[in-house]
Length: 260
Ligand code: NAD
Image (cartoon, rainbow, N blue to C red; front, side):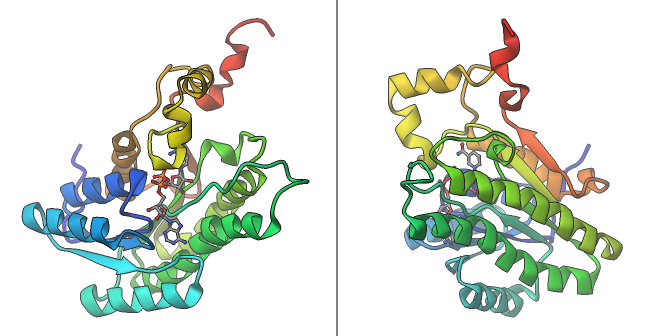
């Protein structure tokens, strides 16, 4: 099996941290030219560009807040100017928001999670699909979460955004399929990144988390990145309109391994 992305033009949102950074490096290793979207820490995005240009191929750092449709349109215009369009979009940017039950939650904060995770994905997917439908080629991969199906107390905005992402993925896939364009989602379980540092850096929280994972460990960003590369490549040419779970068995409801 040969996973090859030579001459493919890819954009990864939130590509300068955690899972996004691992996806950027894995796409570059598979031969793609990679544009790294960032909203903070331009220095890490630029360092990644330098790293890729030294070893593999072309790379760009593109600033845009994905929740802002004008900023997203400007980012795609820059991509057009540099590379004449794109073939792969990984909608990875996401936030989980502060923890609070829905009756105490700050509405502006709740809305912000939806603006980034759901609207941000839509803004980028719209721009990408316009181009992919016209060229009759392309893949959009949305970074979902096990929380598209598992409720998570205190994070109603996050779970709602990821459940919405699942249906957005399926509907966009239906719209794009006649043009040979695939749209799918990847749902990680608990992956060790800055987003969940408060969990893995606290022994009690960490132990509680491991109880929820049949494989009894957190995943690493690379384990998501490798699956992302497979899904956007021709190895997965017949896969569309689905969420693929990479979660150490978390959605196998480990609480039912005993009793019941
Ligand atoms: P992270 O915090 O390291 O990365 C998130 C990235 O998104 C950062 O680069 C951040 O700057 C960027 N971002 C945030 N708001 C943005 C905006 N408005 N515009 C552009 N970029 C923005 O966390 P991560 O764990 O690497 O998360 C990446 C994705 O994976 C998210 O969508 C997250 O929901 C999803 N995910 C993560 C886990 C996990 O366990 N780490 C599990 C399931 C799903």
